[in-house]
Length: 393
Image (cartoon, rainbow, N blue to C red; front, side, top):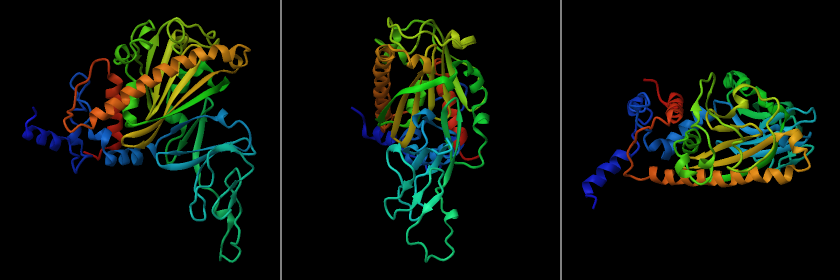
């Protein structure tokens, strides 16, 4: 039986401190891996901590939004809400992909819903119309408004840059460019020839867990023998090891034979002919800060794209991409189901354990833990988050 005094002290210990962003609360986390303690529970459960992450991380860095081949033709678009910001991603008549705030310049209504193809965006409220490049085309009944210049009221454009066919947006006009942010990642992954790949499937999940929980899980192999004991654990090879990186990313590399996008015993497509160096000998698992993970293996790639929603909610998009010449094979649809089977088994296993962790962290009796030597990137990721959100010492 738990004594009342013990419960009371535990509850008090778990409550959010008024000075939550003081470095004093995180000294144990800042120690070297073998001496460090894990983050306090409030880093995963507090809306106040989450809002600081949105303000200082997601609204400041390059955020991954999938592949440009999702909208291959002029007029193609899709909409989403990322970190609370409604967005339109559209391909213009000039072939350029742009991002816009999905808010009418009249009184702020959402302009577009879902995805599709159109010649222009028309606000459903008062029928203001916007071109695919964001220009205001028409504004009914505005002729009596003094000093109204349509050129001043186009959709607000958001910075968008691409690498390898992947789309990234940044809400900060003063942030460094995308390639500076990515550092040496494009060079390290160059031989996969991502420009010559095409996305063949996107699957979305809504999870009741903090975004960091899912990122941490994806970047350590400690859980694999237990969470994936009858699936991924059957794949042979040494434990994935951290790699040295330059830029806003960290990563693991696992040397092995065969594809890591298949379950043990399955056969699939031939290796990508252009692969060189480590890429030809195993799989890269990079995390692009803050919340995008790639699986870059010998015959394809997949990604885990996280959209934060709240302190205890997130959206996960799992995308799968293969070389165009492989997708053109007459037997592609038959063989690719083996890859889908792998993801459709392993991803739900990670989803379930992540939600269980969120529930445990929400307990008033939770206390900070310690790191295993198998969790160096969890320690690095959490310290990176603290670097962004804490007040100066």
